[in-house]
Image (cartoon, rainbow, N blue to C red; front, side, top):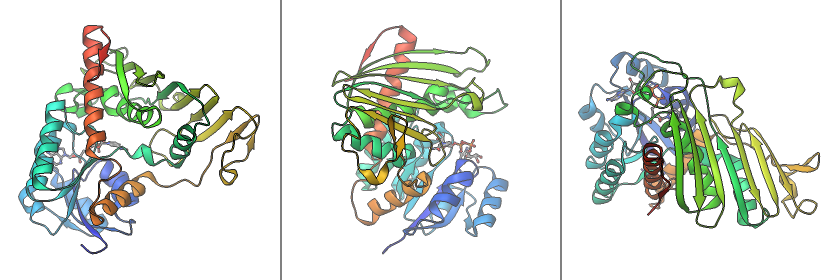
Length: 347
Ligand SMILES: NC(=O)c1ccc[n+]([C@@H]2O[C@H](COP(=O)([O-])OP(=O)(O)OC[C@H]3O[C@@H](n4cnc5c(N)ncnc54)[C@H](O)[C@@H]3O)[C@@H](O)[C@H]2O)c1
């Protein structure tokens, strides 16, 4: 493993095949795809053929292949068992979100990875959107003033489907909140820092499956800022613009379409003063605001390259286990609030 991490993929037939393998692992300079495993042998063979890699017939066969790291992209209820199996085989693991179904599961995975000395991270790839990084810099540099309010939205149309694992809490851990709201909360924590408490409503408003198709969360941050997350499985794709809004005592940063699987949307900063010192290379005039449009990166590529570098450099990845565990804790607090009708404090 001199300058390339040898990767394997578990759950090769879903997002792995659509995005992470072709856009992330294959083009990454510091990664090489070696083997894939999926419970569907047919899907797995197709992926192996498409990318010219080994199709493993089972977990044992997969873990015996010549790999250093594993991207786990199976349904959420399989993560615990599979992450632990990888760690025990001394493989580093980038696990898709949510890390586990519960805090206890996440803690168990983290403990085993630490014991085995392997790196663990979670797929919060939306942190790598260059506009999000530019917005973070504005917040960190104080250009927004004191953070006041944020909103993050991620919604889609997700109709009932036979066997869809996200539609049952037993396999998905939750619905729109667990699946998509987790990204929104993670981003807001990146911008505004540590959370103090949450309050949440969930509902099944349109679809009849067991997991929620609707969720809103109110977040109170330790620094006094507040935020809301709205995330629905029952809004047509085209009518949700996946809004991100950050307000502070000196202005706002307003975006649409930067949250999601694409590389870039639109983001405009309205800051007190003219350009409030924002790096001119990344700006152009847009009405009375400043367009924040740094060169986009492919977030799946950035995610794989960053995690591979962390392994090669023997350092903590950006999307590390603290972030993974924190997400699990906040999600659990949200579901507790939705169930009890109470505000839940985060420890
Ligand atoms: N960050 C992102 O952009 C993003 C997008 C979609 C999904 N995800 C995450 O990726 C994971 C997978 O989601 P998806 O949309 O690809 O789901 P999916 O159902 O489309 O695909 C999952 C794949 O895992 C396989 N599988 C099921 N059980 C398995 C098992 N026991 N062992 C091995 N393979 C198994 C399935 O056959 C399928 O090919 C989830 O954690 C999800 O939250 C992340």
